[in-house]
Image (cartoon, rainbow, N blue to C red):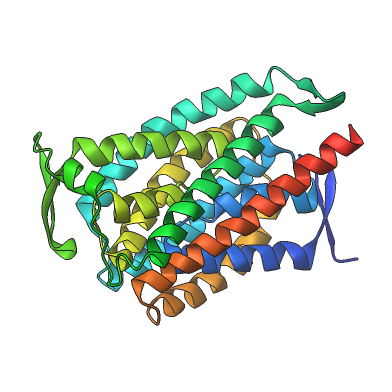
Length: 306
């Protein structure tokens, strides 16, 4: 009763839990402009036992659908540097292709032994990457907001000033951000790196591009949310197509996750309007800790069962 059999994953999932998880991810998408994959992918693995390849493919389809709603809502609110988002997305598409190929290579290796326990190399690498990246992002944001820097909506850093000084053409104007502009090669490279994570880990990349837009390009927090949503939409769309072609998408799981997340996006977008930049960034840092906890718990469970 109230369970959903997932034929690709060969597991039963508790239906209310799936919808609630989708709602939580939708809130994150609307609030931070991220796809929520940094939490959804490890949550599907840890809570429902969905293998990483299927979790990644399913996650990307859900991120694309939810991201479309988020990008539209933020666009209407005037929070999107469209040209910047498109360049980030172009780099993200190229990176997603590379990420898919890396995942296939890792999956082909199979299990490795860790302290006498067997765990697949893909689980070990993705779990380690998720935990490391989430911890780094949380530490960066928490340190900045606790130090009293960036009390307004924007943040100015030494790295950001150096990269904005690069004037290789073409230069993208940033009218909403109050900046003179940035060389297109900078966000293109950023998008490429983030796109690798999209194809490999099933994340829209927003949990990386969101802080990068703030701390590297100096984009105000609310504009970073909307612009990140555009990058997430493009990169996740391409990644979803690639994984769907490999049979890694549970359509029923996508349906119920999306049902919850569409409502969650509305809540997230409205909530974002009520908070100033520093508070949004602190909330984001706190949420990443949930992702780390899910990853550590799942890897520990596998090693003990090994």
